[in-house]
Image (tube, rainbow, N blue to C red; front, side):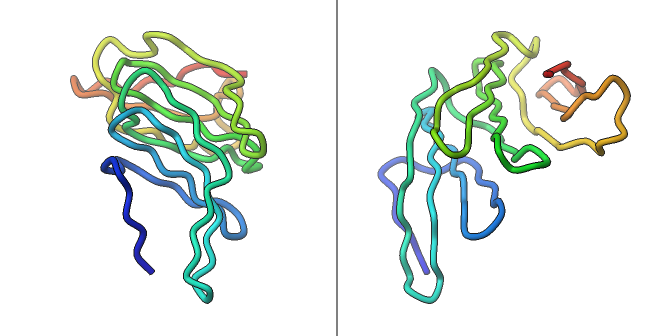
Length: 127
């Protein structure tokens, strides 16, 4: 199956069942359902951020998606509704490059780690 987009995708992450979240260079976060047997790709929702999406990760229970953007922000979206629940402005001093989900035993209940272009790894507190 192949899907063609108007803007180049920059990242994606898959969740439970047939969900896929796609991040784009123009700042759009898009949630879709796909079915390989029917070769279908149906958009559920889109949210336009102010800067290009550089990485995404589902929360452990897959109810939220965390996205990092080139303007150094970290956003949290509700998977079902597409509404942005939280946003950390200037979550980095440099542009972020990666986001990784941490084990549930991480100290201080931190959910993820992020890295940036200058080599820093941050553990943002995001309750």
